[in-house]
Length: 293
Length: 255
Image 1 (cartoon, each protein chain N blue to C red):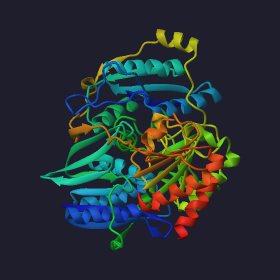
Image 2 (image 1 turned 90 degrees about the horizontal axis):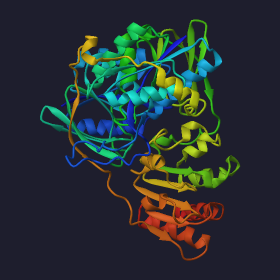
Image 3 (image 1 turned 30 degrees about the vertical axis):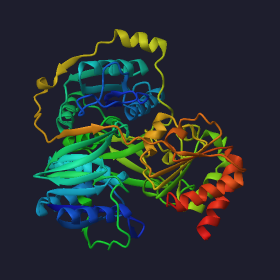
Image 4 (image 1 turned 120 degrees about the horizontal axis):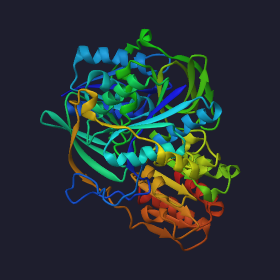
């Protein structure tokens, strides 16, 4: 199978998901990796450049990361080319002249296996494809975004100061999320210090982002981000079904809550029935100690 | 300004979705249906524009089965002005986008707001596809819309902040969140919605090509059950914390 992978960068580094896609593409057969060079992502210039490339190379499959931009670009590209499309796929393999894909549906409450005809465009969830340690970085061909296709004007970037220095939530291998049990935004240093000790990203429950304690972009759950880290730590989160939908595929789940009947304990691998204010500082210290030894 | 919102009726987010005995679909009997959550945010965003400028007209449309009429009625009760139904069962996503493109061509809205993805298939395809078919620019996953002279400023949530884009009208945006939580229908709103006509026509009547690539379901299953986890109890906070950190390193191997 001939696959075209669309690379993404964060800063100067290729995103981990790009390496994952390149590994999967090599497994499927002939792989090419392209990066669309432009000042910032915008649908029309990116779709135009990519569609031209796809039409000249005619890959059976176009793979993108199911990231904020990858999902958007993939959808519009598939519509332009009239190709089959599947978003946020967690596994794929060749099945005759089609693809068999796995995809969470109903916000993760169902796992579907689907048969998708080729040629196709597929976006793959970051972290879903396992990457061997030390996998070689793929060779990346740059193509220019087609500025002539642009109809939008970029006005400005309005930054939220809080999260810029940490790893991105949807790609993080460790996520520490806080819920209403933290009692207020002034206590978020507890979540942040634990996240920093673990080298992870900070998330929040919907109750917390709705209350304005934390920015929306940190929300984990059905109307927020879906995360699949190796370790998910839920602090003071009761475990509403909508929150579970966003994190239940994490490899290992740790829950800290003072209510022993909280639903979060039903899916946790390790539960601690404790007051977060007492337990979290002790746990942060213990993590530092264990990581240092 | 006229704003059109294509919406989808989906199982309510509180429904514990179950795989049907056939193993390729989900149980839909007896469940509660709702407007897909991101579509609700799109409606709220449009209604906030209408609150600010009462001359704003907010219309909703859906391409779906007869039961979707309830979702349209709900949108009217929230305060939308018009609703219409294109009746279809299991249409391919690209065919849905084509039907919506036809509706947009007739209704001539200035702005189309779509939820960023429906909470059943989680695809996020129809919004960008509709913009593509219309030849319109689009901005994905916005959280705010601000009218500007003959244009709109669209705030797009990205890692670390918001990008602000100016789009000439007509334009399309997919919505990640509204500034306020979606409003509940008021009692007068519900009464008014009951009296409103919701015109309906079958997908065939639109004269769009319904042939489009789609997938076939091989199987559906619930996610692997979790559980059998350990509750760490004995000792004080420090002792439990140390046992947990050690277990995460030696047992779970994630540290």
